[in-house]
Image (cartoon, rainbow, N blue to C red; front, side, top):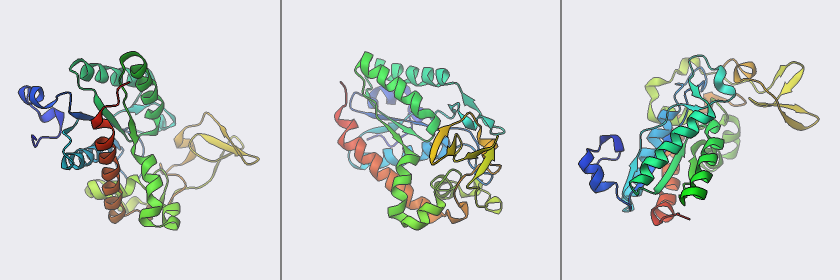
Amino acid sequence: MIPKVRMAELTSQEARENLTEDAVVLLPMGSLEDQGIHAPMGDYMAADLVAIEIANAARLDGVATFVAPVIPFGGRDFFDSSHGGISVSHATLAGIIDDMFYCLNRHNIRKIMIVNGHGGNVPVITEVALKWRHNGGLFVPSMYLWQVAYGELPGLIGAETAKKSSGHGGDPLTSVGLHFYPDLLRPDLVQPAPKAGKLNGLDLSSFSTARYDGANFQVPIEALETTQTGAWNCDPTLSCVETGQKLVARLAEIGAGFVRDHVARGLHT
């Protein structure tokens, strides 16, 4: 198996020889937004690196797996208020994913999995994946990394610690960042995140909801109105490189297993 993992590093001849109908291609994507005043804004960097870990683990199982260039801009949502952030409309993001599917499918590269690192991408991924299933017989699963990571954290670091460290601006992304690119983080800026707030008399319960009489209501607010630190309802001081190492190893294990047991076998319908 060719040692190159990134599609961008293949020569055109290597692409012809290796990107066959048996190859699996991972499409990483994320966002450029406020991840907490202590963390780099580009969570797409983590998604890209986790995709590489998944590909390398899948290769150990004999699956020829490659990683496409990462999509760095996330679908527009309440994080559009992030200073310096760049997001794209859902129509634009859908067009990019749709075009990537088209190009791969044209060359009979149909074993595809998305490795996603941004919640705002989920509805767009669902829309495009359903379109291609209905119209092209392409079945593309998506691994939303941080959703998976939230579920794994209690088993890796204990339920109580996970409850305190988990949240936007905390775990999983801060610990994963400390593992992958510690020099880009600013430990001197780390501080516990707010857990409550008010706007227009509403008790805010998240970046996009307000709580009333025990129920959450969707409200048109922006992240910057909820927190000035970019973090919410967590304690980033509890994040650490050891947690990041455990999380990345587990995400790679889960992702590679899914590639081996499902994607590599073909999911076309």
